[in-house]
Length: 385
Image (cartoon, rainbow, N blue to C red; front, side, top):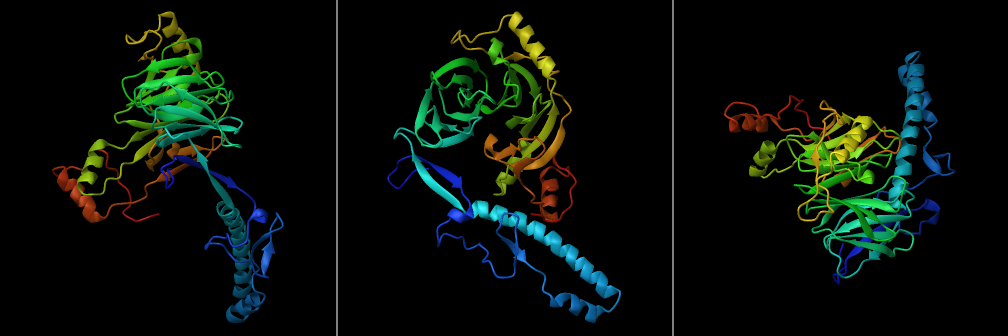
């Protein structure tokens, strides 16, 4: 973000407990506590008790046994409501009780594209329009290192899963780099034929997955092997992520949902590209063996710079060709648009739940000469979300 004076900044937010909140800073959405609130496990207040006159009123209105059944149902609903309200209140507190401050960056810094935290959460790396990657101490806000070398804007950055001194970045100039933060040096480089849109370290730390164009590459950078093309989609890939669990055997890939539909909606002024998140099985042993074979054959080098590796075709066995759909219509700008829980069980992403009306569906058929678009699916015509 830029301030009124044009100085580039980042905003640091810190969530604090309600006891440290200053007076007069509550959000308009805040709920005012009353005397009839229930005590929470943390000593706060959670919700109102069921009025004492309600059971008697139900018994008088419905008689026996329907009155008793209604009272029991109300108590069950009340307990469930209390549990839901406690969770909502905890979420509301985390949003309301927030402190923020601006982090000043050098005057040469341009827009900020992507941010990633180190494994110990002590530092974070950010990519910028001045073609640099900056590593910042989160506690002090001081820029610890500026990594220079990308020919164009770095679009994505990821820290090594357990070594905070290593990070990977990929830029719009078709280049991926592995950096050593302490020495501010690039220790490995690879050149592709498309912009690097997303990166993901395998939890084991020895393989880096790279999304470039409509392909996914697996790079065993530590042994000097070239990136191997192991997965190809019909449409551009926007993001990928290994499941964050030890010996992860799956990777999530997000690819566009058909270019023709995007152009069609753009002509009507409703351009809303969506992406399909799919779960692919991963054979880690096949990926490592393929890297060793490619290294033994002699890794190809860039003609422009002999120190730069170029990708080669893999065996195609490392990533399954039969993925399972997780989210059909996800929305995101870059690979920061979705995330996985540390346990690898839950996925968080923005999703497009808008369903076209019957008239819009008829227009789709007419525009394709009486045939439905290739990416069309049969879904209920009910609005949700």
